[in-house]
Image (cartoon, rainbow, N blue to C red; front, side, top):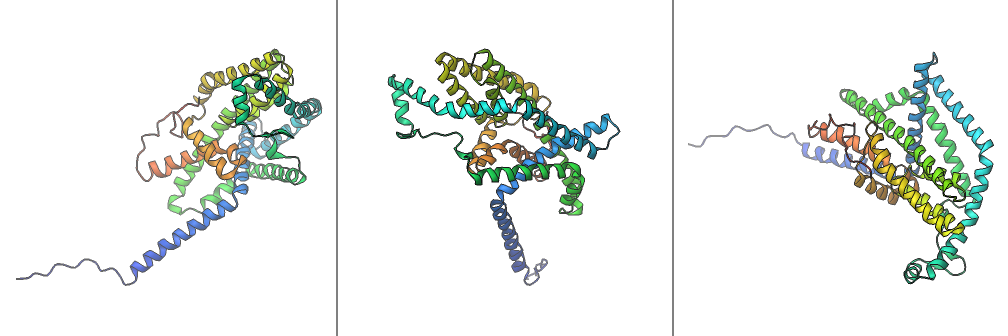
Length: 366
């Protein structure tokens, strides 16, 4: 005797169509968001850079609020005023000298490469290197480290506008971060706002630690490099030390960007000084990578070096020089988001919570 099987719940008519339509709409919205982000990539990267500055200003304002009766907003304005005053004093005192030294660097740089080319041409292995470098016989070696920031009026206006926007946005963000935080949280479903707040707090905490570590690292590299070049008798040692400290914000690539002009200028003055300059940069980077950074990373954030290199290459290819500058903090943001939203929330793996920093990354930069 044939028995009838109980029928399961029937799918209401049109449900499959509606499900496919919702998926298609979701994919379309994501595609539009990605396209919009790509189109506005420069503005978004500038906003992210302003966020980093705002974190520094806000933390400084909160420190002043803890030490004085002033509120945090007033503390932010005190920090802005102090920074403006320091910049003014720096420009009035050391600015003219550094400006003259930068002019000398621009003047000496081409002749330094010509001197190096003649020196290499006297050696067999050097001639092989020269043949591998694109050369314009009328204008010399086809290499210009400042080519991307040429002195055209359009470029100058663009840079000036970017700096004004960066400063303005960072100050407004630092003065009232709760306003923008609540605005972001209102875009999240009420049931998930608590977790979203935890993610925002973790991002703020990790970016602050990373920025603090970077400031200490940059200052140490600038001082050690400048003093070392001065003791070696390399011309323009102060300016070259400042360049080394500033470019050290970009890991792996920054030391190379600062070493090339320093060695070239030293070579134009004396070949022996060029060797000393190269040795100083190698020694400072070894000290920074093997001694200083491990100490900093005990209290700051350690990022895996392989991921850092890949992030620099990827963001540089996608967004140009600005992408290279902010590649490391962007990588930090991605790591925190992946750990908290995917590894912990989706996979349910909380094994990284007890790691020595909030990112869950334990690799040291070398």
